[in-house]
Image 1 (cartoon, rainbow, N blue to C red):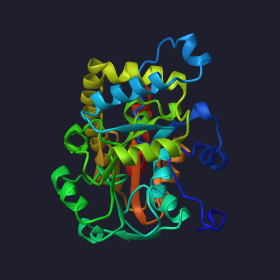
Image 2: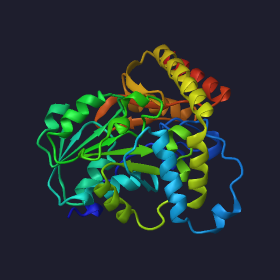
Image 3: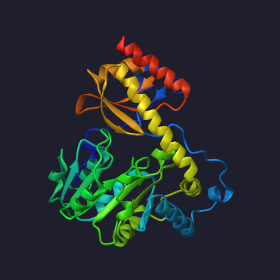
Image 4: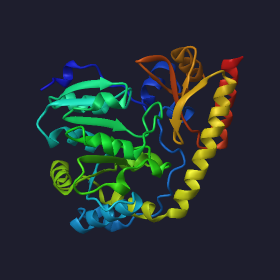
Length: 333
């Protein structure tokens, strides 16, 4: 098994502590656009005392998973985790280590978790390269470039691999990309979903895996008896049932993504791709652009594998938009 301590740390968005350490300021001074988390969170409201005080019951988990199934339009079994990350770390233990093929560039925790569990990880730039793998991973839509794949094509790919893992963490605003509604009990597919990104509640640490009964049973065992807190269950059930908030949010995210593209164009950046939750642009020099924005206390995401790519999440209020617009005009000037 790979010694994780010998591997370089995996970089992520949301590392605002590093920005503060390097550039100064207090947390309240910063506009953090380094993640793809909805900046306008679902309104949590009052959480019951029972949710805080009692250990989550089996019936609580059942109602949570039933609510998730309705939201994701699936009849397939579901397992809940402490974030999609919990599922990513459990997936490598569904089978004995073999050849794992990953469509890249993408979220680096998939490769990291598989390598840590002893899998031989190979990265490919196109879907055809995944064929023949014991386990294949596709993020749809992809982070960070927003590449999207036809669910029917992915289902065809699943017949050419031992197990296909499809990470749909950013699919909520684009539900037609999801395989979940068409998933059958016999399919060798596991779908991952993130609650926190679309609902803007990443701190809840809630995610789901959807798949066959046998695989979901195994994943539930790997997750342990209480993988999700009582408050998270209660909040998620309410959010999943709030179709009005969901529709309003999808519309707002779509408008804001267009607005962000227009601001980036002012800076002379070219859209690489993205989702309604984040946008990735090609810049002349991403690190230099990140530093310029950091001087204005705006934190962004750059990538070690491409010196030009910069990813931005969406500002959440008028002040954030004004700050970003002023900073981008400064870059262009």
